[in-house]
Image 1 (cartoon, each protein chain N blue to C red):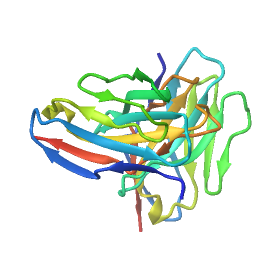
Image 2: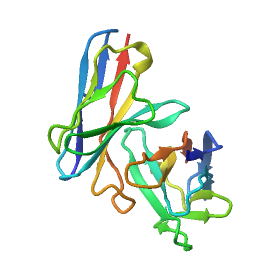
Image 3: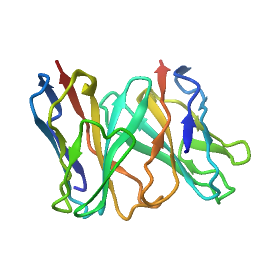
Image 4: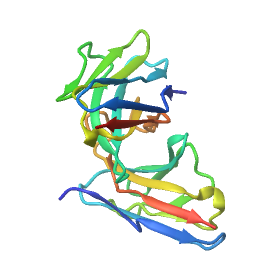
Length: 114
Length: 114
């Protein structure tokens, strides 16, 4: 079974600084997909970024980028130029195939401090 | 506007009183799913449906029922709620089920069972 581990329950960062959230996963599959979701205080689940395992190039979305290390089974999220609106719970998630669930980590609560 | 709509947003009930949380999507998605979110545990899948009249258990199905009589609706039924079902519930959908069609989440239902 696939598992996703987020080892940092809480983190904080100063506004405009850069922060990296870590995520590791365990799978025997070769083709899979990884996601980062953001959950602000409004509770809404928002897709931040996704990465296909077969792509070596790290995904980027504006201020958000990932460091995908397939051999190490690591998928960290880097937030550059942190903004107050980035304050949220961040979930790393793994997806393998059609009828398998999206497997979530336990989340990292990020606070951006002015 | 494309969205997944859950109702109610908040619900307080007593042990044993049957309740239904509704979920509706307007995107013609085949795949729908229910998750529960608990502190320190992340999101865990309860049930999912690949299409109309097709439902399957997720990781934590005990105490829950679902139905998929129409493509757009996927209600979550608690026949006899218990306090351990106090949680934040999310409905999600995608089409087709795959990495290029990430999950769209509803805004969540906060359920308290006393």
